[in-house]
Length: 220
Image 1: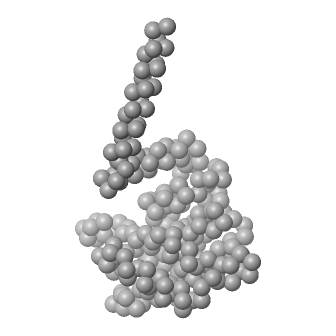
Image 2 (image 1 turned 180 degrees about the vertical axis):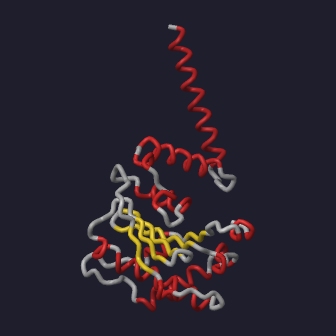
Image 3 (image 1 turned 90 degrees about the vertical axis):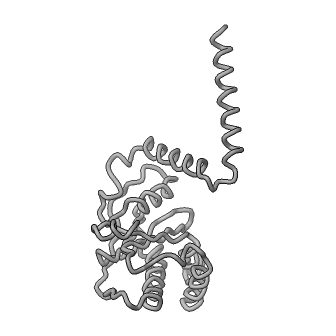
């Protein structure tokens, strides 16, 4: 998002990959963090510093930080909403055991974000003590496999309000599948996809075969 859009009051976003939050995970047996806080911060600092895409990002104009996290094959989203002064946990299934399952991990992700901004962007004043926790209270997911699609949806459209990313229609599985198809096409047709030409040739070959069979069937 460019500076002009940011000045109009629109949200700017920064997306982290799952490997960052993954290092926050808790041990399944003991419930203790896999990495100590110091080890975690050092590792994530190194991971981000080594990534070219991170070098051109600016925290000074970023309103929303998104941290997707997968726990026991279920994706949730942790959002640090600078503008609303909230730490937002978006779970499309609204697990009742949030305090036990996610709260500790979410707090570690948030603490990392706070520490990183304080050290790297000391010129931006954020009153972290005023932030509150927000947890999505409405169950929206109609099945047990579409949590990843909701995470993608939140990263695209979430602005801190329930209706900014989800509508009643989004409970319809056909619309979720349509979103999957659009995402698949974006990936396949992207110029950076090294397999694009091969996939397109195979798809064309398959369509021609289907059409030929249809023509032969129509002649009988």
